[in-house]
Length: 292
Image (cartoon, rainbow, N blue to C red; front, side, top):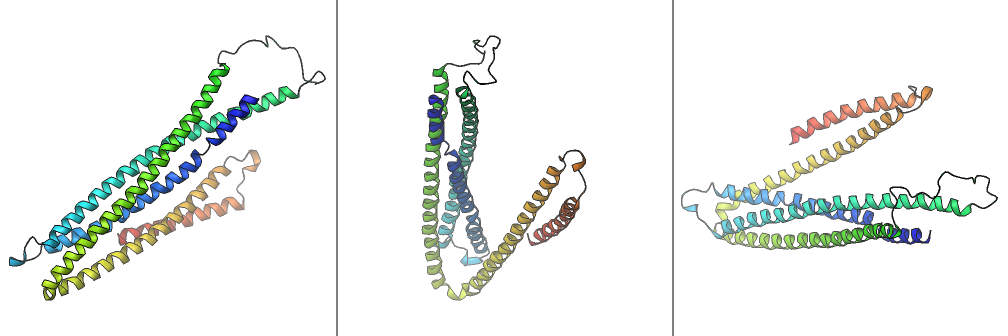
């Protein structure tokens, strides 16, 4: 029992993969949001380059503005690749942490069961009513292990968990650093691009005044449309969660035993709610398709 308690203490200190999983998932989500946030700047930069391709005659020049825009597109592409790589690494690490957590949970359950058995044995005495002679009680089960093997297994689980958690921490730090560095690089490039634009605009203010106004309105419309789409997607996501909840409740209630499996008010209410949610989801999907 002393060995098992010691192993449990080691296991408890290694049960932090759950915390690491949450932290890793949050960092992965942050990287995904940062990756998603790069789409609009990329679209804007590409749109600017596309707009400038419509210049005519002598105005078709490879000026500093065009050079900086190309740099911005390249910088955003490089940033997206770096973030995507980190997201893939985070996904793989989350899978490993999940595997470690499952192994630790399994080992922990086995040890809890063993503790219960040994506590029961310790509570037995000569007056216990349930003691009796057994057939070949000194036999060694085929799948039994030595104390050293048992300790090695427990230590291996602990060491593996700590190693994975250490790597997960390092990966989170690397992701945070990548996010910060790429944001700084893109911000510097954005400033450089805007400076080139301002300089060029001063040279051709009259020519670009109308174009600047159109670009501003286009960006505003894009932002508003994306906001509308985001609200629709959020609403659709909430409705899907409600539908999953209703489905799960209905499915769970099919396992009621015998006469308890009756079509009660809750059953009808859940069924009506499913139909209403399905109609709402269909309408939201149609609106979302139209908006997109």
